[in-house]
Length: 409
Image 1 (cartoon, rainbow, N blue to C red):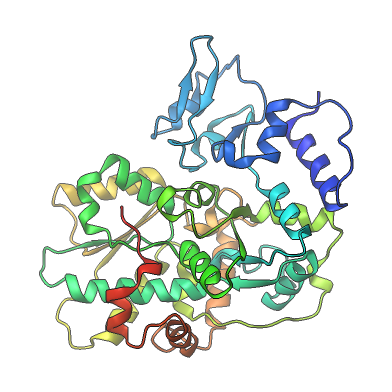
Image 2 (image 1 turned 120 degrees about the vertical axis):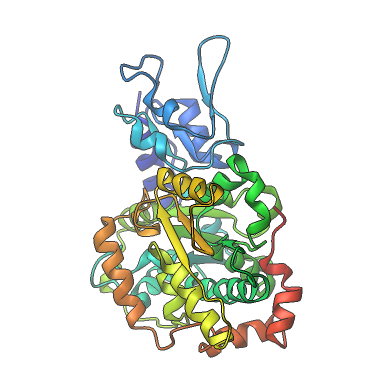
């Protein structure tokens, strides 16, 4: 019987070739995972795990208690509890766990001519598909695959930077006030919601840049299909959370996209340029630890140069470090007023499905950030133009009526 990964590659080749009959034997569970990923958790079983010689390392690594045991001794992953942090995938020495994959539904959507499918690419993308693959070449590659266009999510990180800076300026007025940033990392938010719920009043009700991008694209292009692309497994779960499931239809990792390019024999580095960058440095540095804090700090300074309380940021990456930071905060040992958590070491560039190692990914992000024409969203005329198209005439109106960028925790 073919393994999960072999079956995945077979189906990918067949779907890229516009569908042939499946050949050989297959596991019905694996086939259902690939054809109907929405039925399953962000992490699925790539092989049987009836016997384990590593004392259930995967299960013990899950702080969200997503592993469940049936009366017959079977083990399942609860798709409601699993947040896709990937800790269990790393812990499984036998490689019996894998990320859920949205490739097949995406390829089928691309083949439906009446659908306009947009690629929403995470800020960590720079350099992931090769040194020669510029933003314009990557956009051209997605269009060659059948996407209507490619949108940089960094533009929406700009918008969320502006929102969080406005929230900070409005609400952090005393020395003991503080804000837990809500942008970027769904595992960080799940950690607070599930284990430290009493701190939720300090989290601005902001969606992530991914959700903001999906909602805006769907508002400007009714009927559009949105596909987020990044290094993260947890985004697959975030996209299906009931209160924000209106934004993103599918989530692909960088490695899934690399597989798609290879199956289609598409080499982005050989394509022409299709340039349309609109993001500032602030939005681009969201991809690495400390980027959100730095972006918000610089924007707050521009918003209110005379304010007496500046952004004093503390960051943590990796779930253990995030928990330790929260405990220091709860114990009154922290002196910061802006706390940024990232579940992956190094931030998004250290995501489990990044193609490059996190140090190289961080260097690439910094390089791309320095190429930006503007430093902050307040300097970025495209941000203001986009907000105007969405019906916000002033910054104050954006803060008060920005339903597109708000969620109710």
